Length: 327
Image (cartoon, rainbow, N blue to C red; front, side, top):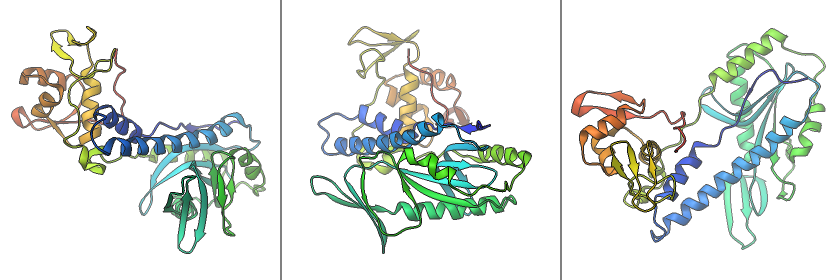
């Protein structure tokens, strides 16, 4: 039976911000660039692991009515995020996906995940078991506030069967993606607790209640980049910074390429990197343009949120909305 509604997974906004920082930091800038690249690789790997589970749900036909929601962020007593929520009229399952290199060990006291890489490096992380248990409690509260009383299960999915892990005796199952359908089908589902109308209403309310997580600007997490960012407009053709503004758009002096709207990517980069509100001066300094009127025209053309008037006007961007592709 096909699912009647689904919220698709989007690439994390953090990846876009980290990529903007990596593109705008020169290779000779100390140790910050390797740190950014390592963080980017980690987030990318996590996203890739989640996609592994997504493919299982997209290719497998379950016999029961169900709903799959990816990367769902809700608010109960606090904000919480679930990698994947699988819900039927009889129960709900929260899947937390892990994709980490090295040998993994989960301990109970204190709750922790310990990773040992092949080079001997050891690092501790929050326990995925604790995370799943907390999310189950918060989702239960969210349900009960809406008079929904479904059993909630939690499971941890290791993205690839090559991952090595050592566990203590825990009630939270650890699964590889291909084992997920069997796990789901073995859960008790004799008596549906929600009728069709209630189940459909719950699905729509879950989707409507989702609020995409907006990460802090990259410079908040990595303050060392503040004075290391290469400013200017990047050429869509050759990738070099330093395009010059002319009447109809932007011109690259390196490859002679032109673009009518290369500034859009640059301004989005600014918000991803620094956040807050952009003023006319910020726009001129970052895009390397001289005239206030030119900056005003650019900012007013981008459907940004505004506050104040005249010289005190500032602009902010809804980062949930992707800018148009560069041409």
